[in-house]
Length: 331
Ligand code: UT7
Image (cartoon, rainbow, N blue to C red; front, side, top):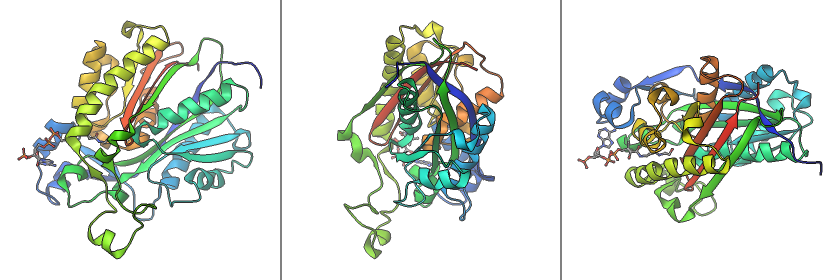
C-alpha cells in the first residue's frame, strides 16, 4: 500500500429524465393540493423516468458527463461505485450494467445501499480507495428511480419523490484540497420507518404481496422528519469538527434535497445565511441517492463555487443512515 494522498472530485455530471410531473398533475391523481405540497415540502415538480428507462440508463448518462467533465477516458476508470436502492434488478449490480454501457473495461464495480445517504457513503469509499493508492480514478454515481416503487394512490409518499442520477469522478488532487473529512452513521433500529416490505428474501414477491401493495415504499413520514431535522445538523457539526473548521468557513452547503423545512432547520443549526445553502428540491423532489450529486453538478454549472472553496455535503435516508463530507474544491 502506498502512502496516503489527497483525493477529491475532478468532474461531475447529471442524468435527468425529461418527463415532468407537477403538483397540478398530482392534484388530479390523489387528494392533495399544490398549496399543501409546496408549504410542507417546498416541491413544485419532479421528473419521472419513462417505463423503458431504468436506473442504469440515468446513471450511465450522468457518468458519461462526469467522465467528460474530468477529461477521463473510460479505460482509465479502475472502480465504479453505484449508490442506489432502485437497482435495475437484484443482480447483477447496476454498477456492472453501467460499466458495460460506458465501456469501463478496467474497472471493478459494485453497488452500495445506504438510501439517500448513498452518494456520500460512496464518495467516502472512493476517497479512501484513492487516498491509499489502491485506486487512481473512481466513478461514483448516485441514482434512483423511486417512481418505480412509489404507490401513486398514496398521497403521503407520492408527492415527495422524483427520479434522477448524479455522478462524480474521484482522483488524486493537490495536497490540502479534495475531501477533507467525512462522517458516516447508521441507526438500524429505525429501519422500520422507511422500507420496501416485499421483493427481498424476507418476503419474496407473490400475488399476495402485490395485492397488499407491499412492492411500494412504506414510510412513517413524521418519524423520518424528526430524525432528519436532528441528524442533518448533528452530522454537519461533526464533519466540520473532524476537519477542524467552523461553520463560518463554509462557502456552500449542499444538503440532501428532501424537504425545505428539513434543509432550513439544518442551515439554522449552522447559522448559515440562505445564500450559502443550495436548494433545488422545488424542481426535482426527493431523488434519493441522486439528490446531492445533482445539486453539486447544478451548483458547479451555476458558478456558485470555485477552486479553494469549502463545500459541505450532508444527507440522511433509509437505514436509517446519515453521511456528511467537507471538501475543498480542487479544480
Ligand atoms: O429521504 C428520506 C425520505 N423521507 C423523507 O424525507 C420524509 C420526511 N418527512 C417529511 O418530509 C414530512 O413528514 C412529510 C412532508 C412527509 C409530511 O409532513 P408533516 O408535516 O409531517 O405532515 P403529517 O404526516 O403529520 O400529516 C399532516 C396532515 C395529515 O392529515 P391530518 O391527519 O392532520 O388530518 C395527513 O393526512 O397532512 C395530511 N397529508 C396530506 N394532505 C394533503 C399527508 N400527505 C398529504 C398530501 N396532501 N400529499
